[in-house]
Length: 387
Image 1 (cartoon, one colour):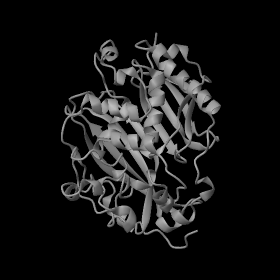
Image 2: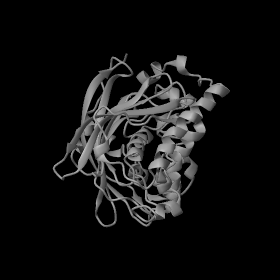
Image 3: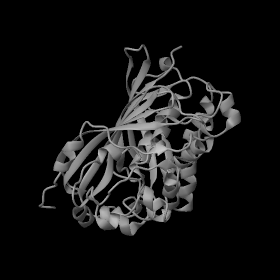
C-alpha cells in the first residue's frame, strides 16, 4: 500500500467553472448511430433498420438514449479529470444520467458543456489513497434543447500502487466449451426476442408490479475485437471528426509511458496514429494486456463509459419506444475482462407519479459476470405510458 499522499491541490481552481470542450465538425450521420448500437451489443431495429423505424413514433432511425456520450471526446470523463495529480492513473468510477426527452437523429449537431463538480479522497484496497472526482456533461442539440446530463465519476490513484496490486491470478482468459457457448447463445436471444415481441407497442405502467424482475440480458464473450469495436464507435476515435481541444496529459499527472498524444490536435495533422488511444496513450491498457497491468488490470478490459451505456440500453430496451429512462445511476465495481460475459438484471422496487405527472417505475439494476462478480450496480427510474 502506498505511503505517500495524493496531491490533489491543483484540482480546486477548476471546480464549478466551465472547462474546454471539443466540438463535432459534421452533423450526426445515420451510420454513426448504427455503429454505436453495433458496438454496444444493442440489436434494437429502431436504431439501424430504416423500414422498421419508419413505422415507429419518430418515423425514422433515431439514436438510443445512450448515444450522447458517443459525441464527446472524453467519453464523459473530461470534467471529472481536471487538475494535476502527479504520477497518477485513471479509471471510470460511475455515471449518473438525467434524460430530458429530445432524441438524437441524423442531421443533429450535438455539443457538450462541461463543469467540474467536486472530489473526495478515500483509502481503497485497490490502490491505497484514491481520488474520486466528479464532473457534469450537459448535452445540447442545435436547437439548444438539453438532451441529457451526465455526472461522471473518475477514480484517480498512484500509478505505482495500481501496478503493484495487479491480480495476476486472473491474467488468462476463461475457456468456454462448445456446449457452454451454445447455451450462452440461447440465453442471449431471449432478451433480444423481448425487444422484437414488443416492437412498436407500448409497455404499460399499469401492468408492472413492485417485485417484478426485468428480463435477464446476457451478452459477450468480450474480446479484444469487441472492445476495439466499442472504441471505434466513439466518434472522436475516427481521425478528423472533431475540433479537438489541446491537452497536456503529462501535465495532468499521467505517467510518460501512458500519456502520449491521445487526441492531440497538432499531432493528428502529422502522425494521427500517435493520437489514437487504442494504440498509444492512457487508453491503450484496454486492448494490450502489457499496458493493462501497468494500471492494475490483469488482462484486456472494457470501457467504463460503455458500461454506463449498457445500463441505459438495458432499461430503455425494456421501456420500449413509448417509454423512456428518465434517470439512471451506476456505480462501477469492476470492468468487463476479455473472455467474460455480462449479465444484467433489475428489480422493480417502487412505482410513483412524479411532479410532472409521469408514471414511473423505480428499479435496482445489477451487472455481473459469469462468476457472479459485480461489475456495476445502481438505481433508475423509467417513465412508462398509462392505459
